[in-house]
Image 1 (cartoon, rainbow, N blue to C red):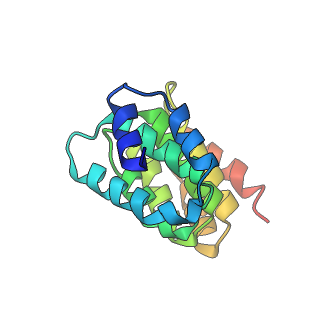
Image 2: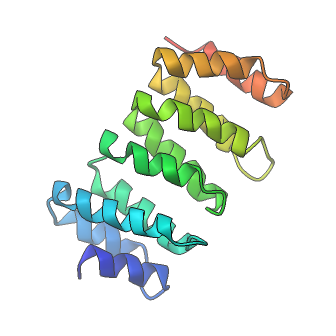
Length: 166
């Protein structure tokens, strides 16, 4: 079964997420960049986004293991979509943190304004961890600006992360 059909099957609850990891365990993962990229772009054009489809696509990204800066732009677009479930948004931030592309620092910083601290998700915390790990001058500058936030929780989190910047 090709990846497109698998994503659709998972999104329609006809297959478990495990079929995706099984698929990638026996394939040349580099070959799937364009296929996954196209699927994410198509998903982004639909409104509202389908939560299970997004989850399956993010899972495919993580199974693919060829995460690099080619995905930065798409992940930043996903991060700007408020109709994505919070745990999927957290996963998007984790993927950006793993990639460590300085070009993602602005969208990660913007996400903190889009998704303020909450008792139900940890998006701002994960965003600040990502900025710390990216560590470029721009990422550190965003943390410094966040440390001056009027929102006390944001300011505390940013100051904590600035202590760990190398």
